[in-house]
Length: 229
View 1 (spheres, one colour):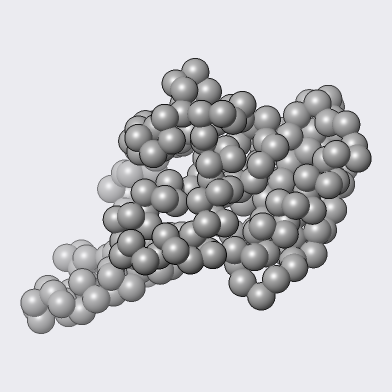
View 2 (cartoon, one colour; view 1 turned 180 degrees about the horizontal axis):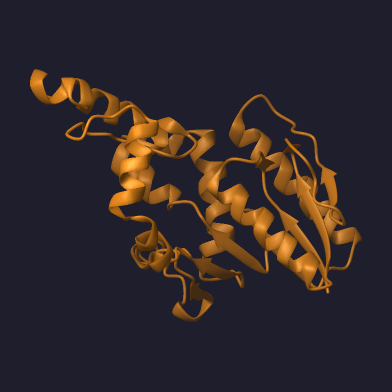
């Protein structure tokens, strides 16, 4: 099959991007032809993958997203693909990998009604509706049942267009590493005392993931506990 895969930007460390590269490599390994369309690419490109850069146009993220969607549509019109897979919300997708929360629901929770009057809202809400609106035919790979319910409350997306694919974490493999011996080795390597508390956060987009709030919470601990953490 000839596949078109699109995302706004690629860099090697984001969760969405890591899933994109794993899925793309799996498609290549199975003998499919993969053409990737993106605005920016950082890092190495997998062997056998065609990457087309649709350079960003516009001074803001939402203008660039709208321009990318228009440029992508023009490219897709000129080439025949068996499947168009998107990791960001743009019109014309056959399949969407839903790694992001519902934009319109988040704005309603976190912003005043004035936010809906902005160009940013109109563009991002329009791109989201192009995927989740009841008139769309895009099939959606959803990671969270809760987010599915939020999207359906916003857009009345038909149930049959969702396919639930929970994150593939092998809990048995995690538990096999949680031995007293490994715990002791790691704490020794990090210079931690037996009664020290150690907190770890892993992820990109620190503000979205709440690293700032975690640091503030750590600083707010009682002095004795904070000294041992």
